[in-house]
Amino acid sequence: AQSVTQLDSQVPVFEEAPVELRCNYSSSVSVYLFWYVQYPNQGLQLLLKYLSGSTLVKGINGFEAEFNKSQTSFHLRKPSVHISDTAEYFCAVSRMDSSYKLIFGSGTRLLVRP
Amino acid sequence: NAGVTQTPKFRVLKTGQSMTLLCAQDMNHEYMYWYRQDPGMGLRLIHYSVGEGTTAKGEVPDGYNVSRLKKQNFLLGLESAAPSQTSVYFCASSYRREVEFFGPGTRLTVL
Image 1 (cartoon, each protein chain N blue to C red):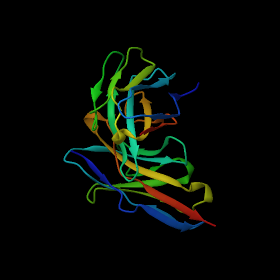
Image 2 (tube, each protein chain N blue to C red):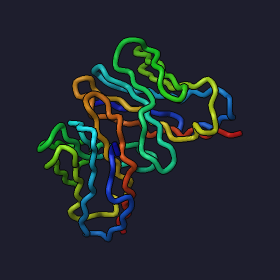
Image 3 (cartoon, each protein chain N blue to C red):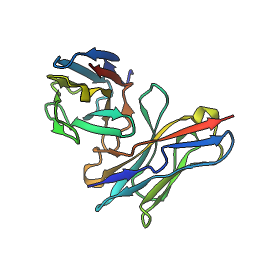
């Protein structure tokens, strides 16, 4: 079975500072990896995904993530955050042979302060 | 193009009552899903469908039933609601690999 761990439940950061949201996964088979963002009182929106190829993945809103197979990690980064990035971020994993069945982490709340 | 829509947005039930949540998508997607979101637990898959007329169980299917009679609709039913089913329910759909489109959610409270 697959599992996802987001160690940080909340990450406070000042505006224009860099941020990294950590995600580690566990799986005995090859997986696809995703990051989603949820703004207050809204549904989830796909930020970026790793399916294959380059381990550095660029997404929307200036976010990027790097797939590290040896460390089973998929950390999300942004070099300079804005107030509008305040939201909950979810890491998710799926098996390659049943890629539509997502397993989500518990989420990390990013709080950007002025 | 409305994307994924959910009805209703909010609902309060008493223990033992039944209800149906409706999800509709206008993108001709084959795959549709129902998730529940609880504090500190992320989203968990309840049931999913890989096409019209098919459904399958996810992580937490107990207490729920689903139907996909039309490709664009995916219904989630609670036959006898329990307080443990208080949650926010999200429907989603996808063309193939990744679940990209989520609905706005239904906030359900069971008293």
